[in-house]
Image 1 (cartoon, rainbow, N blue to C red):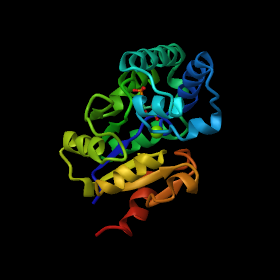
Image 2: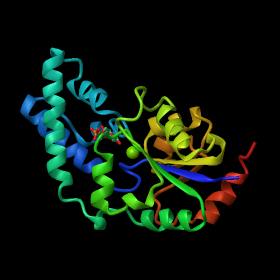
Image 3: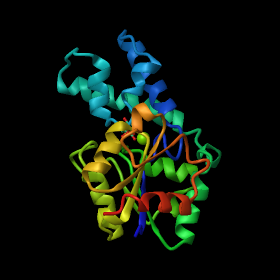
Length: 218
Ligand code: BG6
Ligand code: MG
């Protein structure tokens, strides 16, 4: 039976993907590198360093410069997320978290972001999580299962008793690799490998999810 839920943050609970885009775009403009919204889609769920390397499209820089560029982007991102408030929680997300907790199940955050704690504080949902796994928690990033395995360990639950909710292809792969149930948020092309695919959390009800996932129980 399902005893816990692990939520990705960016793109699942709030639309920070837009802020990540604007911050990378500003950096790319400063470097004179073309960067489109479409290209930004490929950065969904991808850690800061790998995102920068993709944005640089093969241009090489000394390590110190790479560090400065990552810090610069994060500075822009922090400026944008200063505006975040409880209104920026995506429709249905808070309700689902509350429903899960009311049912006596556990909740964890499983985000690659080093800014995850600050974001959930600003969104006013920090107290709805029993555990937080973030960009500081593990070395190997998604699509490796490490971050979600770490989150499940913090909840004291085996992966087979947990559902991961993800909007990124790399995140869906990470969850499958770890032996979790997966709910994919977004288009089929991106998260189609998940057990359940939903356009958003707006209509997600705990009982429906658990019932549908039972079909996949080993
Ligand atoms: C993921 C985002 O959640 O976190 C990525 O989807 C982001 O876009 C990654 O690059 C790392 O985030 P941060 O805040 O540590 O730069
Ligand atoms: Mg995400």
